[in-house]
Image (cartoon, rainbow, N blue to C red; front, side):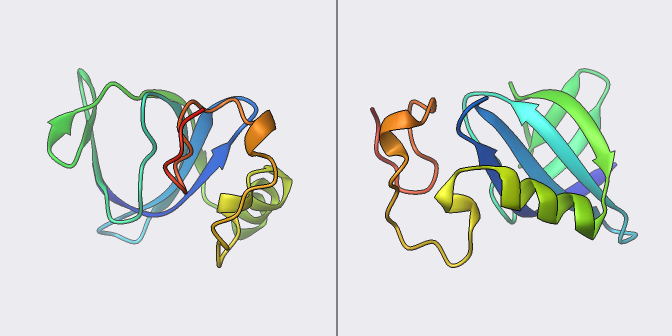
Length: 112
């Protein structure tokens, strides 16, 4: 199954990412994952026997759970996750940077 990432969210406490992705048949899924990088809108995902392929390359991302899409659930995730980068538009400022568990901020690119 091939999907395209539409939106992404980051949890600064758990270092997990969430990606809302859509298939060619307009089937939407929410991926919860861990890994050394975060998926971005426009990335392509393909499930394979050996794992996940991202943008045509074998990925080291670990899928934790896949949820069926619901607007209410995606909104709840966006509202509950403390990362200001999850809000649109993102101002480029992060008051929580000192508390963040991420080594590199996926939104502003700064490292700790």
